[in-house]
Length: 459
Image (cartoon, rainbow, N blue to C red):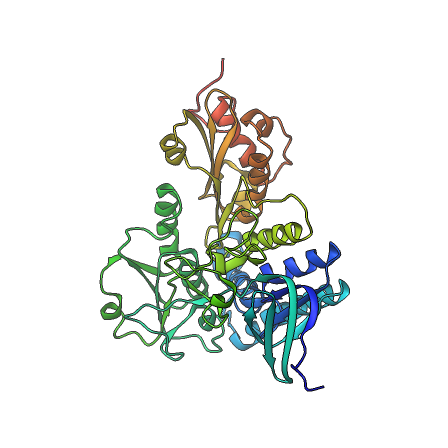
């Protein structure tokens, strides 16, 4: 038989092995389905191989360098601290490789067949895969599209791989540039700027048509962040109307401009799957496309490059395929930025809650009053909480400070559980710990906080 002449029958084909794809494949296999997963490159997708994991690993290393260089007030003097960027890159790559191997083992251990190659639809029950070792065809009952996305260029600053780079390419540099310009307002742009700034590289952060970075966060957070980015040597340039002209003399430019979904080569017309005006695949709460046998999860649905949402979508798709009643309807979706200080938020801000018709009560607790935060030189942040006034049910929280990325999980759980301010305030938090600031922010809203002066007092 000539390879590719006959289709192999399986229950589920997953196109793409990033967080959305490999999670959906594993879960579908756990639920009794025969699954094939198709990946052009290494399993783990952009997130594991070029995005989330290596970038956060390198940010962690850069933060270590910055903290060593600024430890004099603790009585620690470290002279001639040097950065071996290739060795730092190798350390980050070791982290990536270990996790990639783990994902491969999880797929194989759950009976998922891994096929390396590029796949597209022949019709609504068959895909063709072309790879290094020839072509294969698979007939499926259901298919999950999880092909992810690629960085979107600006028309005025197209990526050239040398001077104008994607964020992923910037993190792969093996020599520190003399200076760098970062164009963008989102969390990726701010994190790239933070990485180079903490390593001592002069950074210009250009904000196209925006006054503050991170427009998706509350304005108080953005003002706070702006002042602290300057502390690590980042020059912020707001309301830039012509970024290309503004960086014309810069030797290195990094552009963060969102993503383009990887759908162009899937031949979606063969399966009656439509795209929205931005090229993403619309799905319902069960992650089904316009063709109910074809599912889509992750970046191709417009989830803004968030792996936690992508993995959840993958689990929902697998459950629906297995006949379970499941929908993607999270009550609390967290946002996190690994900057200095860390920023995290979940739920509604006070302004958003009021705009939605809620009467709100708010609490605010400064990290400057938290002992553990001060030990970590993180006393500049805060925790704010928002609740519905009559019931005290939590509506949202914002955390700026050390360990914010971990602390926000507590508030996300509280929102999912319908917790009240009293629930959070009455929960014992370890001392000395940064999590005490969460408790005391809730106490401030209730008027029972004792570690700040001027709070309202409950009678």
